[in-house]
Amino acid sequence: MFTYYILIGAIALVSWLVSNKLKSKFKTYSKVHLRNGMTGKEIAEKMLADNGIRDVKVLSTPGRLTDHYDPRNKTVNLSEPVYSQANAAAAAVAAHECGHAVQHAQAYSWLTMRSQLVPIVSVSSKMSQWLVIGGIMLGAAAGAGIGFWVSVVGLLMMGMATIFSFITLPVEYDASNRALAWLKNKNMLAPNEYDGAEDALKWAARTYLVAAIGALASLLYWALQILGNRN
Image (cartoon, rainbow, N blue to C red; front, side, top):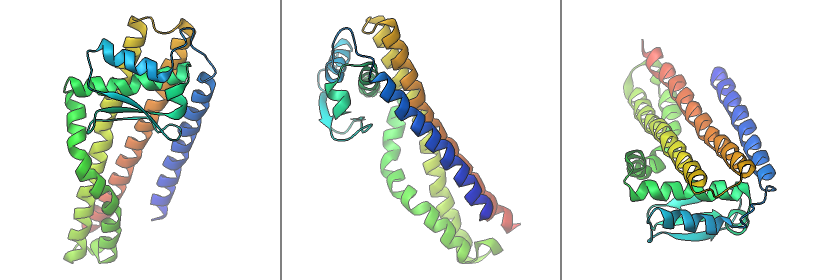
């Protein structure tokens, strides 16, 4: 267990550092005001229109960095600063979320797969670690009895969450690539504004990468504890 705590602590530290860097980047690029004066809402609406998407609404949602695309009701939800402000960070986030809307409209396979896994992962991710630890306490380490099978079920659930984390990566990277390509091709931003948007999205993507690596490391650790000790 001590090794596990060190592993999780290290991953948590890296995640915290990346998250702080992301917040710092967005704070910096929030000060880079757009020469065209377009707010995040206006950027989003134009990108949707340019891609022939007419059935997606752009809404404001409370909080910071709470931006997301909801495929269930076809809404691009932008946090209040992104929705109402005209800066490089807002443009980057708005275009990125619209990238997801474009993926949805074009039936992008990775997004479809991710959406199908959401109901399963929303349940399994909450239960997996409890089942793994509970199984070990019931005797999984001895490699026999109900405890072992309980922990295996937990391990499978954890595996689903890990797969979900890795499926999320191409979804997020592709949305950013679509956003940046549109911003560049439509000459929406000045060179310094575009550089800021690109840098902000790169750091946003790294948060998903760290989360995926953390999920895989945790899965491998528990798999070794359960399956390795069975031998």
